[in-house]
Length: 84
Image (cartoon, rainbow, N blue to C red):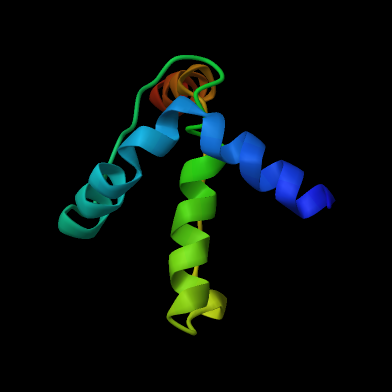
């Protein structure tokens, strides 16, 4: 019952409308940066789409996903730039 509720909530997120386009872009490019409104599902659903695809292909153990926030990335870049 809880699983069905989660699936329904996931299907309502705006990023769902772009799933095929996002996955196609990920397949065709070595680096993909995705920008979207807060709450659209980009940091929760896109990694799930990628993991689901690996699971379906029987390659789940090969899947490594890193998600970061722009503000955190800027902070890391600033720290690297300041290092001697």
